[in-house]
Length: 552
Ligand SMILES: [Zn+2]
Ligand SMILES: [Zn+2]
Image (cartoon, rainbow, N blue to C red; front, side):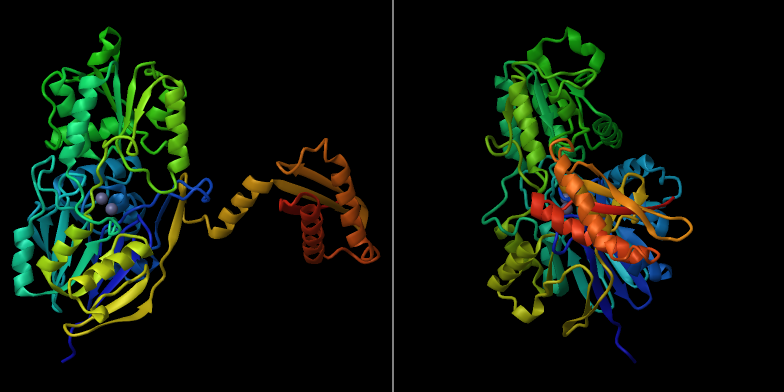
């Protein structure tokens, strides 16, 4: 009898922050853990989001038993609206996570076909050969879970995103006793969150932020405007609590924030004392020191309410002298310059701005080194895979595992696409599947490749030059001198001589072929070559060069 084989295949989130997706495969059964998105980096021009490549899964669609979602952050649920219609499998999650998934799916009109299964924070369910159990973990969003997965090969623990806050906002700390119990029984594999593996010590409790918010609400002379991620439900709760304490009323501004607050109130994950939430039409009658706004825009997103307020472009709310703006979130890497610009604008409008560098207005939701070590010590796995992080995070987390006594050969630093095969004694990387970025640009998914991105980059930096070549319709031979039109490349008046000279350059390059019919492939390449060289010598720029042939 052949022994069952277990494959672990990360499709996203290893070697990068975001678009988390982990595949586990045992015989004829596949389960997927998380389906997240990543926000584009600055050089990905015009791209709205990035999601994992699921070609591997599409080939094995009939084996997939379900998608399990650990919590409701974008980097864990954000790809669902795009991937779920292709995979068409049930999605398992806790209640708040399901609420957030529903909001996402509804936005993309993908809710009606989706099969969403509700599991309590300590619930169990079976997907083929996998028996899955949730365990509550503390993170910056309520209802987060880690996973215990019983397989024919052994028990797996997947931490999800977690920290060990002993005084969390929702009062539900990570269930360490269940993990200790498992550790005693024997765990084959631990996969654990590496996002903050660089930080020594312990992550401060959410309670610290609550205290800072209390001081701000008490001391601010005017209105307080708090921005955060709309999914940071526990932060929204802290703002409401603190506003209530200081007799301020709370205005929720912006569609995504309003949608999520409404959903979280309905499901009981947010509690607002009667009468504390106000409508914007009540704003005019209120003294400034009795007002709190909660809105999005902590990342400087150009269309967010905060950025529009800062640019006097918001319909209902403008920044006033004496306002206090609190950016209660960490900058997502790549967004720093947008955020800094927003902060500058807010100061210019006369607001006081508090952000993570000047006040403790945010703590992150991931465990630091001591917490990661504690988890390793409790679970005592035979094998370990650091997950959720760039390569340096994964490496540092691997080092931590060594420092608590794990042997090097039992620690696997995987990258997206690696296939790790495990049996109870050994593990080995046995191959690689397709993985990478799928770009979502407005409404289209996946048809933007790296070539398109490179072109956009070139256009945005150095502009474009169109070269028009005329050929005789009958003979196919070149006629006259080429025309050149440029956009975004040089000032066409000042550089008239240079552009004029470039027409000669092209004419000379094509001259010796004049008595033969023009061969397009050759002419195309030739024009690009000579102009790239000429323009680079003249301007040190590399505009995109587009030759066209017209028949006359
Ligand atoms: Zn998270
Ligand atoms: Zn995450």
